[in-house]
Amino acid sequence: MEHNTLKANNIKVGYGNGNILNDVSIHIPENKISVILGSNGSGKSTLLKTFCRLLIPNSGSVTLNDTSLLCIKTKDIAKTIGLLPQSLIAPEGIKVAELVSRGRYPHRKFMSPLTCEDYEAIDEAMAAMKITELADRTVDELSGGQRQRVFIALALAQQTDILFLDEPTTYLDIAYQIEILDLLKELNRTKKTTIVMVLHDINLSSKYADYIFAMKNGKLLAEGTPNEIITTDSVKQIYGIDSVVIEDPMSLSPFVIPISAHDNLQRS
Amino acid sequence: MIKRRRKYIFILCILFAITLVLAFCNLSIGEKNYSLDQVIKTILGLSDEGSYIIAKLRLPRTITAILCGIAFGVAGNIFQTLLNNPLASPDIIGVSSGSTAAAVYCILFLNLNRNIVSIISVFAGILVAILIYRISYVGSFSTSRLVLVGIGFQAFFTAIVNWMVMKAAEYDVPTAMRWMTGNLNGIVTDSLPLLFIVVVVCLLSIIALRHGMQSLALGDQVAIILGVRINLVRTTLIICSVLLIAFATSISGPIASIAFLSGPIAAKVCGRNQSNIISSGLIGAILVLGGDFIGQNLLNTRYPVGVITGILGAPYLIYLLISQNKKGNI
Picture 1 (cartoon, rainbow over the protein chains, first blue to last red):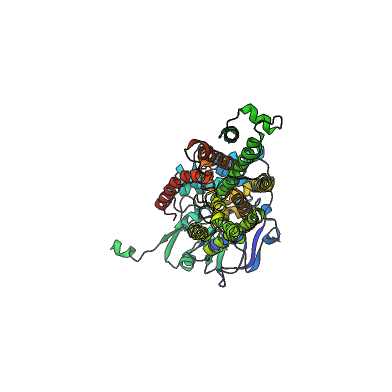
Picture 2 (cartoon, helix red, strand yellow; picture 1 turned 60 degrees about the vertical axis):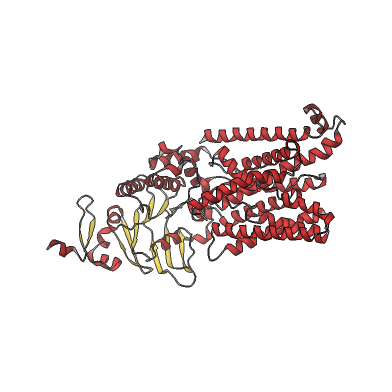
């Protein structure tokens, strides 16, 4: 199993003059599921985009195996780092298998058609996301959860060792959320893929993450296992809300119950 | 998927066959009709019968129709795919009309010869493409803004062309008219080799970049993630398309609607699962050959090919504007 070390070293990132990320240093834990938590505007997505070279740091660097991303051929990075962005465009009328096959781009030789290896990777990606039977459907006619699985399969076909996902469960109902996260966990356990995602739901993060990064105002507030990070104090710090933290009886991970101003009123 | 590839190749063969049949129709049918046998013999140089009409008049015309059709079809499809909008075809967003305006100016006011006019109109096309892009780039890039700016440019250039024709000396107007409607009359053989080279080189470059183009259709972010050098790929594709459009325009004039219609028709016929580069080129050739055949033979007056294809394109443009408006894309 190869180990790819991805690090951010004192990065400052921003659009124009202001920096959204200020002096962030992160070492992505290999072969684990990491979740980046933080309130809106805390710089989570910016961090993800910087790791995926969609944004270039104003200072500091992102390094893959101690070489700056800027010094590695973009096609070679594409063989190691994949991303499911927040919004994805599927060309009108495209079939599922074709869309997934586009993920093979970095592995394809100039001008050559898809190879056996490519077809295997495509089939495997579709099987992992349980969409094999949708292969000949057009993407337009799928439900939200199915589409999201197709998009993840596209990222899987890229066969990267590290996979970033920007809010993979947004707009999905709870059943699809669990389904997608379970599939990702399975992927991590079977193929040892390093997974890094931004999630909004703190309890799902706690349930699925091996490691958590908490962001606030463009800085890394804390990092550690869910048990270390998710406490009444840190929830207050990250989101500015009061809460009670109990143990999730199923996963034994911390479970956050936010306290509402109306809670006591309703009881009395 | 492999089956779909085979089906695509099968459809390409059929399109190619249709192109050949239409080409032979255009060669053999006209004021004087020739048999297939005579046409082939004349082309191969085995017979002198009708050699003037076939070899000197109809053959250059037919080859031009095919090359220009391919050029317009492919270039239109690239624009539409890259910008992810069926309205973003070079003949809708002013690139073609920019070339036309420059050419008409050179013909009517500078009296330049044909080859120089071609080159100038190529540069004008590229310049207009850059200009439209710069103007529509306000902080960020938006396709619908580009389409709207382009339609504005289109109207502007059309007005300028009309104005120039009104001001021009009367005997120059017929030459200038070619540039306004798209016309295959009076094609001379010596302009063909250059057009042929441009079409082949651009087509090969575009085909070489087709995987990158398909990735770009998924959005810039995904393309970067997949390892596509997006600026290089996009710039090369746009330059090739503008070259195709401008060179074809400099020879046949802006044959209406070919660039605009070929891509969507190819997508209807072949599906949208491959890049449709060759299929849209063949559809373009079929439209030009068919339009010219109808314009020359089937109506009581002879119409230039652009008039016929323009009639085809107008209803589709209206349909697109309405359906895009409903979707809120414009």
